[in-house]
Structure formats: C-alpha cells, structure tokens
Length: 539
Ligand code: G1P
Ligand code: ZN
Image 1 (cartoon, helix red, strand yellow):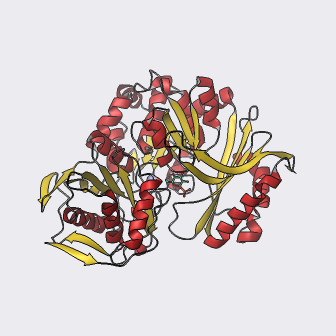
Image 2: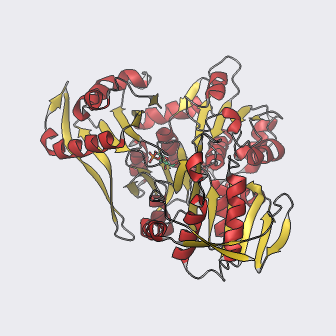
Image 3: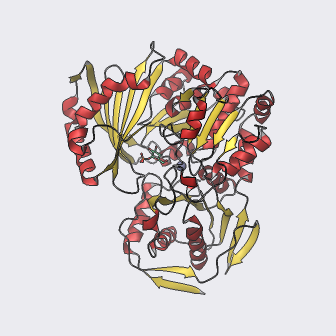
C-alpha cells in the first residue's frame, strides 16, 4: 500500500516571509508538493509519536494538496492528523488548535492575501509545536532537503472524506476531522467581554464584515451574527470559494473596495471590518473613516484595560521596523517594553514565549497578541468592538482622541511591483552602499539624521537578521525600503513613509508625505532604475 516514488529536486522551494508561496501552476507540477512535504518530514525526523494539524483557506488546489499530505503523512508513519472539516482552518484558528491540543505542529495551506485560482497563488505554511511558523534554522534545513531529495513515500489509497466530523484511519495513522470554528470561538470568548458587545448590538449598533469569499466566513457568521447578535447579513462574502469569487482577499483600501465604498457612503454602518484569505489580517473602518494598521496597534495597546484578558496588565509591545512608530509612544507612556523586529510574524514569537510582549503588529494589516503565535484578524475586530462597547465612542472618536493625546504618525506604503529581480536586488545593494554618505545631508529641508540597514538582534536566541534599509530624518520622519518576501514571481519594492505631527492632526496623509515620497524616489533612483514613475499599489 505504501509506494516509494523516485523524484528529482526543484530548486525553488525556499520558504519566504510566510512559508512556501508559489503560483498555483508551479505548485501543480508533478511531485512539487510531494517533494516539499517529504523534505519537511525528513527534516522533522521521528514521526510515529507526532500529531499535526492540516487545513487551509479553501483556495484552489488545497483539496488536492491536502489529500497528498494525508497520504504522505500516513506513508511516513505520522501518528495522527487533525484536519479541519472540508479542509478549512484559518491561520489563527490553526495556531490555537496546535497550542490548545498540544499538537506537534501543522500545515495551513494558504497564500494568505494573494489571489487564488488556477492563475492565482498557492502556499503551504509550516508551524511547529509553538503554534508559530518555524524559524530560519528549520526552514534552512528543509530547503537543503528539497535540493537533495530523490524519493518520497505515499500511501496508495482512495481520497479521504473530510466532510464528516469524526475519526477514521489510513493504515496506522489516525485522522480526526474537527469543526475548525469551535476552539476558536471558545478562545475569543475567554479574551473579550462578549456580554458588553452583545449589549452594543442589542442597542442597534451596526457592522459589516467582509470575509472576501475566504476562510473567515464561517467564523464570522458564528461569532458576529449568531453569538453576538449582529443583524443577519452583517457578514458578507461568507462562503469560502476556491477562487475567492475573483476577489483579491487582501483587506486594504484598494482590494476591499466594496466594503470601503459602503463605509464611505451615507448608508455606512457604525463599523466595518475585513480579513484576508486565511484570516490573519484585518482592516478597521468607522463611518467614513479608515484606521491605519499602525494606528490600530497603538490604539489597541493604549486601551488594553477594557479587555478582560488584559486588564490586569500587559507585557510589552512589538512592531515590525517598517510599521509606524505610533505604538512606541504608547509603550513609553505605559512604561512597557517596546521592540522593533524584521517583517514577518515569526520574529514576534520569541518575544511572546519569553513574556517580553503581549501585543504586536505590522503595517500590513496584521495585529495580534500572545493568545496565539500568528496574527489574528477576527481578534483585532473583536478588540475594537470591545473598546467601542466599553467607551460608547465611535471608531473615529477613539482614533482622533488618540491623536490628540499622542500626536499622529502620517504613514503610507508604496509598492513597486513586478520588478526584474536583478534590478531590484541591485537597487537595494547600491542604496545600501550609499547610505553612509547620506548622513547629515539635507533634502528639501529634511535633514538625514541616520541612514543604515535595519539589523535585528533577537534578545532570546541571539540570532541576527538584516531586513530593509532605513533613512531617518531630524524631525522624526522615516523612509524604510525593503523587498517583499511573499511574492510568487518577480520582485516587489516596498517603500514605507512616515511623518510625525503633534499639531496638524487632520491633514490628508498623501499631502503630508509627498515631500518625503519625492526624497525616497530620488535617493533610491527608483524611476531611472525601474522605469516606474509611480507606485503600483499605495496603501
Ligand atoms: C508581507 C507583509 C508582512 C507580512 C507578510 C505575511 O510580507 O509585508 O508584514 O508578515 O506579508 O502576511 P512581504 O511581502 O512584505 O515580505
Ligand atoms: Zn494572511
């Protein structure tokens, strides 16, 4: 029943910011998924005492890949798989399932916020027993395996039915199909004041949650409509579809257009939120009002006392270097630890495990806490609803009062997409070489106070990671440059801009950032090198 299949290596199976992410058509090549999974199993070693979670965001090819994983796990002697019904598990729910049930790790099949379908993207994220994605030392080992792999093992059996809850076997391996929503609901019920949020909806508070035809639909229906009492129809695009119904499931002002249009219309509900494909990203909107993820992290941190699970105090807070410095001011005011890490959620995990931080977030619509080891989209929305319920204030009021208290970091990200990899790499290395010469130079009245690569020295495992280049100005403004690590082809240059203001609190971000944008374009020679006059995506 177990066959050993000979294979030849693929050379492109190195994991990026968040696991292996490829065009679906690449992942569909013969033995592609098999090679990658066998390399993981080889790297783990002993499997007969191991239990893993398997699930995903329901995107195209997940069903096929999940069956391959089941049959390979059985053939490799894995003890047990816990699988979300119909193959669905959101990234945050997966992290919780691993932690709560003390599993040895898991595989969440998702390319996160990237589009799905045959012409979209496919991905596999591998987490260990921490509930978080494995560190570089492990991904390096797996990558080395993918380069030398010669054979894989697979069970020759019909597909396993994942539509019914319960236990079955493949060979000696146990397969337990679970409802992927149950543990997650129990978790958030223990964090937030559900009674206060129920009372809010009972008073007529309205919301729209856009699941973008991806995995959070079933979670959101259960939590917002069935448990908390939001009106039926508050959750839209709730059925996970293999191609996300053509939506680009990235909750930002560009891709969550339908929600944004509604929230900026006269018929806007009180609150708007969206999640990405696998449910770890979130966007927060009020009536005709958008909260940047950087501000959201700062506001949640400042208001932790309203949340039952945090009211007795929090450890510190962390953000990715590219994220605005807003939360740093909150950390200072509350006298808690404050950390800046490279982009990618895995860098927060050591800080959580060592109780250095409770909250963390990234500018890329990711916010979370130490309740799990991934960012958590629905958690962030519940956090906001809980603050609104406790204070009786609107999203806009809460945010404006925050700016009054701390000042405002105007912040935007500019993405230059589809670049030739060699051109992008050269732009970055030339820019890095030039950084020392920028110190103390003045550009249009902005004086450079420090220009250097961002280097993170992990206080827990002492590893050192370089990620991006930062140019700081004397007035506190910043430019951060880095290349995306989640793309599935070509290169994307991300340019993050920030300007801090204590008095001018109600300006248009783009107006405030235009001078710095011009400087950023000039310093990195973006137009001459890439041919691009403007960014492709601005968030
Ligand atoms: C992007 C975001 C990053 C996030 C990651 C996974 O990575 O910038 O903050 O952790 O997606 O959601 P990037 O493409 O920039 O490497
Ligand atoms: Zn995601």
